[in-house]
Image 1 (cartoon, rainbow, N blue to C red):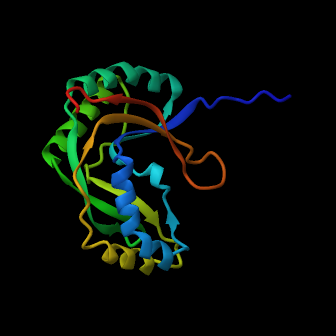
Image 2: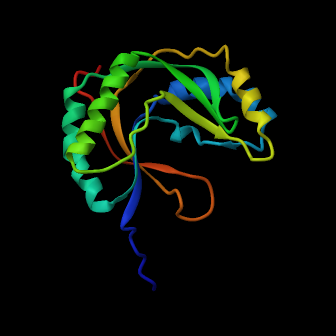
Length: 194
């Protein structure tokens, strides 16, 4: 029997995830777009997230270093109250839903997360925080599907929800054919949550 090699690196990001009922509310609003644009590459509902810091490909050992300080950060923070609203697109290729609510707290949390990562000696490209959930990507030969699907979400306003956990997430990007899948490496409950 062949021994399976464990990867020495993992693609990592730190994120918040909406609760299942909030995601299902958005999925219902997306029903007409799912039917109208079946060729779009739709993200799995369980993978919807708000990225706070994208770290890229990291050695597995570096990921282990992040766990204790991220756990401490989560324990010291209160949950963030957010909602999904409307839709838009990046470069007519990526469909997203917008985020509203306690955006000041969300930005402060992202700043603190990025500080902790840097203090652990992990280098990553700083990108501006643009709170959103990525929902789908168009195929190169069908860019209008994203703009039309975004227009269909313009009037969507989801209920407010509480982001209760900070997630350290790994992805299988570049590890074979098929869609991208995400998995929690670990998640920590925020302190003071309900």
